[in-house]
Each structure stands twice: as C-alpha cells, then as structure tokens.
Image 1 (cartoon, rainbow, N blue to C red):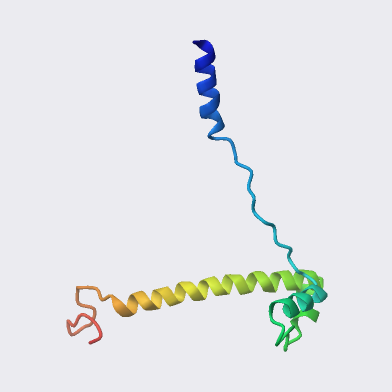
Image 2 (image 1 turned 60 degrees about the horizontal axis):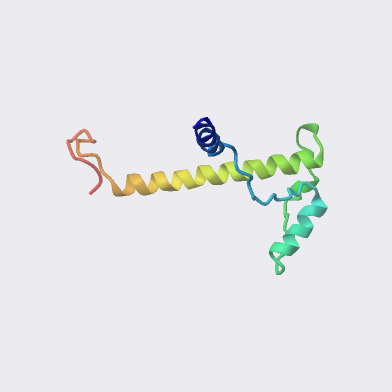
Length: 110
C-alpha cells in the first residue's frame, strides 16, 4: 500500500518537472561580415543593403558589435510600437463611444 502511494506521488510530481525543450537556437549576427553573409543568404537579389553605413558607426564610443546589436534591438522595439499603433488606429476608426464627444453634442465623426 505504501509503495502504491509513493508511486502515485512520484508520478504526480514528475508532471511538474521541466520538460526538455527541443527549441532550436539561432545565431545572432553582430559583425558586418555576419550581416553581409546573412543578407546574401536571405535575399540573393539585393544582398547586403546598408545605405547609411551604420555598421561602421560607433555609437556612444562603443564597438561596432555593440552598435549593430543596439540598432537591431531598436528596430524590433520600434516595429512592435508601430504594430500596436496600427491596431489602435483600426480600433479608433471602427468603434465610436456612445456618449457625446464634441461641444455641440454629436457623438463622433459622421
């Protein structure tokens, strides 16, 4: 009887154990040569495109690797903000509050 109780407790505890994740890791390219190889691989027609030569910049006196990493994070952040702004635009364009919104008592754009 004790063995059955112990086995059931062990089985229930194993359900909360972390599972081994089979996620693939991605390599982060943070040098100019890495970006050139990645650009050619992802878009063979255009290839590497950096018209402002930002990969050669050293922002705040840091290294090029720091600058490339910072610019990549900023691009992701601003992309997410732009997506949220688009959703907000769609919502405010399609839904009108039922109470008066203007001084003359109208409820919104007609």
